[in-house]
Image (tube, one colour):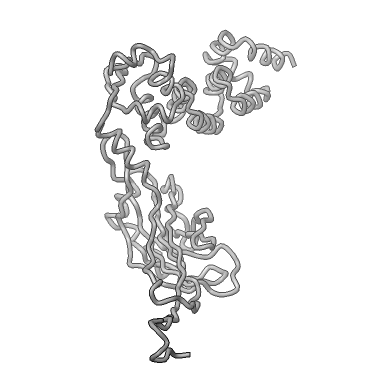
Amino acid sequence: MAPTPGSGSRKPSRSASTIVADNAGGYHDFKIDGYSHIENLPTGDSVKSGSFTVGGHRWRIALYPNGHDDDCKDYVSLFLFLDEDVIRRVKVQYDFAFMAEKRTLFFRKRMQKVITEPAAVNNFGSHMDMDSGFPKFVLKNSFDFTMLVSERDSLTVRCNVVVFDELRPEETPAEAVLPTTFVPPSDLHRHFGDLLQTGKGADVVFQVGGDKFPAHRCVLAARSPVFNAEFFGTMQESATTTSSVIHVDDIVAPVFRSLLCFLYTDSLPETRKEDEVAMYQHLLVAADRYSVERLKLICEDKLCKNIDVPRVATILTLAEQHNCIVLKKLCLDFLSAPANLKAVMATDGFKHLSTSCPSIKKDLDAMIAS
C-alpha cells in the first residue's frame, strides 16, 4: 500500500531484482620433470596432470608434445577437461602459460610467465572436448620453448580456471548491493621470508663456520621450543643473553640456512637434485635438535622414499638415533631381503651402524642367522 500524505515520515521500502553470477577461480601447476623422455611421443599421445579441484569440479590438463592430430604435429597442444560426470555443462574461462623460475637473493624463487595465450571461454561436458584448449599453443621448435625446456629438462604448465555457475535471481535491498571482492591466498610466508632476507630488525646473529645469519629471537622462539627456552626460558643460556652473536659448531652453513628458511616460511629452499638426500639427512638431525617436529616429519618422509643399498645403513642409523619409527621400520623391511642385506654388509655405513647402534646390530644378526 502506497503511503498517504498524512501517514507520517515513513519511507517506502526499496528493493532490486538482481541476477547473481557465482564464480570460483584458481590455478594448477602441472610440472613435467624429465621432459626429454616424453618429447618424442607420437602425435595424438598426451601426458595428463593429476586431478585438481576448482569451483567444486575436478579437472585435468592434457599436454601433447607433438600435437593432438596431424594438423598440429609441429606444435605443443594443451587442453583442459572435466574429470567427472556432470548433468549440465559447466561454463569456464581458462588460460594456459608455461612458467619459469625467476631466482632472487638468498633462498627465494618466484614463477614468471614465459609463454601464454589469451583466455578462452568454453562450456564443458562430461568428456574430453577437443575444442577445450589450444591445439597450436606453441611451436615445439621455437626458440623460447626449446630454451625453456632445455635449461632444467622440465616444464611447468600453469592453468588458470574461473568457473561460472548458472545465473540465479535474488531479491536484494538496493542499499545492500555490494561489489564482489577476490581474497588472494595468504602470503604471510613471503613477508616473513623478506624479513629473514633483509635482516631488518634482527636482534641476534648466528655464526656458522664462516657465515653469519641475522635473525629475530621472537620468530625463532615462536617456531622452536628449544630456541624459546634458550632466549626466554628460566634456564636460558648466558651466551644468548649477554651476546648478540651465537656460535653454532655442529651444523654446516647450508643446512642452517635451510633450517632458518623453514622456521620463517614453513618451506625449504630449492636444493640440487643430487644433494637432496644428504640435505634431508642433515636437516633431520637439526630438526630434532631444535624440536621442529613438522620439519622432522618432512625429512623422514623424504628419506623413506630414498632407501637403497648405498644409503640404507646411514638412514637406519639416523632413524634409530632420532626416534623415527616409520623410517626405521622401512629400513629393516628393506634389509629383510637377503640380497639387500648381503650387499649392505659390504658398505662402510654398515660398519658404522654396527658400532653406533647395538640394538639394531642384534636385529641384523638375527636376520643374518636366519
